[in-house]
Image (cartoon, rainbow, N blue to C red; front, side, top):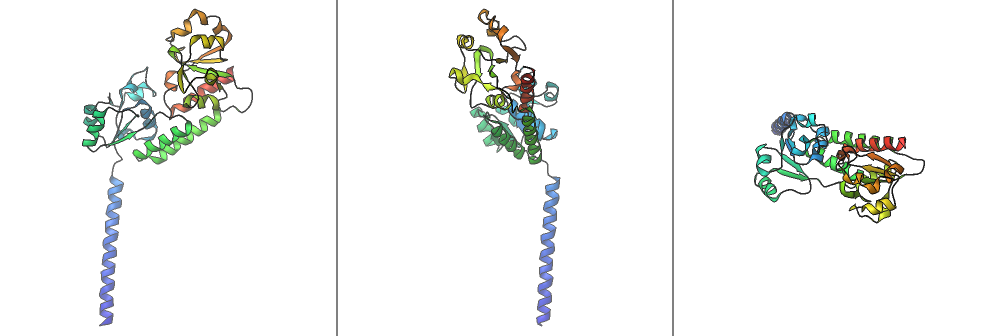
Amino acid sequence: MIRACALALAVAVAGCASQAADRAAQDDARNAGSTRPRVVSINPCVDAVLMQVAEPGQIAAISHYSHDPRATSIPVDLARRFAATSGTAEEVVAQAPDIVIAGAHVAPATIAALHRMRIRLVQIGVPESIAESQEQIRTIAAAVQQRQRGERLVARIDAAVRAASVQHGPAPAALIWQGGGLVPGEGTLASELLSRTGYRNMSGDYGLKQWDVLPLEHLVARPPQVLLSVGAEDSSDRMLRHPVLAGLLQAIAVRRYPERLLHCGGPTIIDAVAHLARIRRAL
């Protein structure tokens, strides 16, 4: 009798184990066949990261800024392979994404629509350092279930910064100058990139804040050794053509700084430090 009960118990346990194994196998099969989330980006800096960490089929749409040669942070021919939206609730929801990744500022109507549709919203601010930008890459990569690709991009940024670093010699005083005299000061990603590539950001000498306007007379009175002009490439910075600067521009190094390198972190850092290093080596 005891042997019979034991045999029955063993059969029951084996049956439960078999059922659990079957359920686990079914779960594994479902997970293996599942697709990663589809994402809509409404921020051009996020677009640049997604191009590196997401599968093309995951990207439902990107920001319309990435289709504009004057505003994009990625090659336009690459950007135009993807649909674009201007970030309105109607356009975004029409793409039926699982996730929307945006900047720090999103229209309340868009937020409300995403909430109603139960679409996850991930917001990414403006990074103020390389480390912060790398954490944002990890956040984006995790959201699209591509953590390994995110880590590979982080490693590429680290390698590019190491390659562009200058360990010896005096650091030339430099300013990044936008049209109208807008200058990135200490505590910005641009300032860290200057420092890492062997320059000294001169903005602090003028008492400027993180982002501040430098009056033309202050620039003339205490010029930097290197002026990195966002408008030098296409002559859009009218202040550079001011008569007061005519003599000064013969005495200092004025070099172009493409606008696409100024506003984004992520993979843009790789191009930015390489550009700054080339200028530094040629001085």
